[in-house]
Image 1 (cartoon, rainbow, N blue to C red):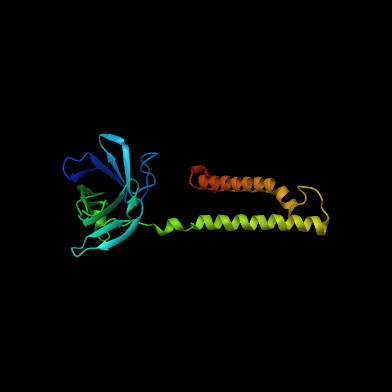
Image 2: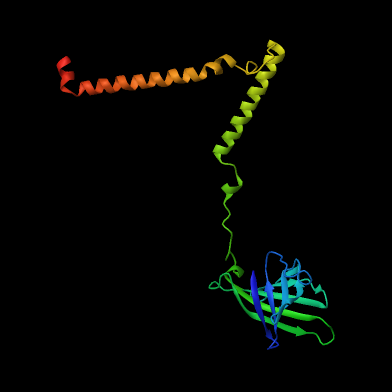
Amino acid sequence: SFKGIPTISPTGSAYAFNWNPCTKFTESESGCQNVLVCQYNSNAPEETHPCASKVSEFQVNSDGSTSIIYQPYTSDLTRVFKITLVCNKNEYPGQTTGVKETQQSDQDEPHYSMTFKSKCACEDGCTYPENPSSHRLSTGSILLIVFFALLSLYLAGGIVIKKYKVGVQSMPEMLPNYDFWAQFPSLMKDGVLFSIKGLKSGYSFLRNKFTKNGYAKI
């Protein structure tokens, strides 16, 4: 957002503006609420006047600039606001010299305009580097989803079969392949011990092979 944008015409004006090009904001309970442009009195900041809350149209100008024309906003009076965006690759996020106020002689409608120079007003000047992978599940996430889906199906199907076809009525015996899973910890232990024993045997063989004692035994 851009705050404290001064009024440069007419000179000496105490009014300034806050502008957010993308997100609506609220300045006070009685003045600017849910707006994109808010005018306030720099001598009395609690005095605020909403200037714009909705874009009416984007207008491409002959010099290559683009103007944002906001819908007229009526509160104590009707205000019309226009912002011209000018490409300047050296300005980021951007800068403006200030707001000019003009008034039609036959209408009680102040018209406000300002020029905003920014790199973001250039073609592809502030493109957002969208990462396609951020919108897709990773391979690991997909595998986990499939695993837990199959696990749930396995458990639910096994319990139903055990209960209604085999006649088992108590847990954990109703779990599918209960005998195997009950023995699984001891099987894991036996496997680990067997692996350790194999590693020790291999280590002893290599140690004896490359020591004098090993050659003596041969």
